[in-house]
Image 1: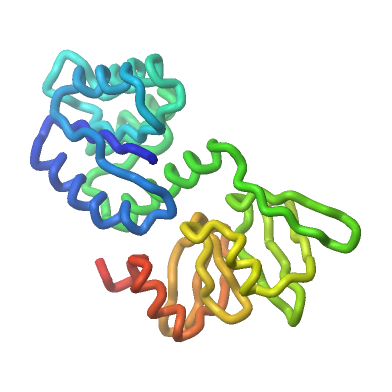
Image 2: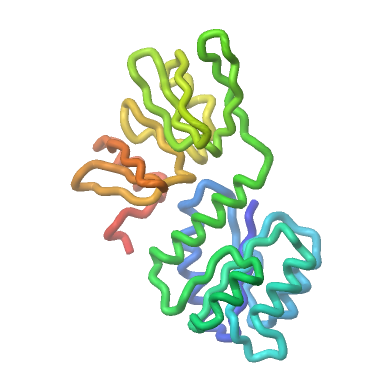
Length: 242
């Protein structure tokens, strides 16, 4: 589970951000929730000092409190070094200070839903990569390899063989797509074409007119008509849904 904590001194801004996250989080390939939404930075620090799972803190910079967002960030990271900080602020002049405070990202208000979704997807992907490996054992010829499923961009089939396009290179072995799909993490991998399975951790955009899916890094994969319906069923928002 990945928890989100929201802190803005404007309760309306908190509610707006919460509403946007409620649209984005169900689409992600991870269990997530909003654990805390508050206007009190001290409440955020107390949360960080308690025992909990991986947490992403979304902080405003200028708070109507003695503490600033930067102060809260420092206190949070001192209590929970594994925390991720996303600043959501209208004060662009503080962006450099935010980078120096080891924040993961800086989202400038007013933001678009697409910009927010990109930042949230990136931080969730990074949090998942920090967890223990999710192994996939494959046999290519006489060589047995163990791949981390989080590092596989996509899989392509050609007759009785499949190729995994991986962050460390490509590897081909003999296996049916049906059998392989049963061995892959169903929360991450989605079959988008008879010959392609994509990793949702790297999903970036979809072009319904061209029947293509683009992954992070510019990789473009074909999309079948049947998969278009699967995207909607799985809750992945498409361009035009915003």
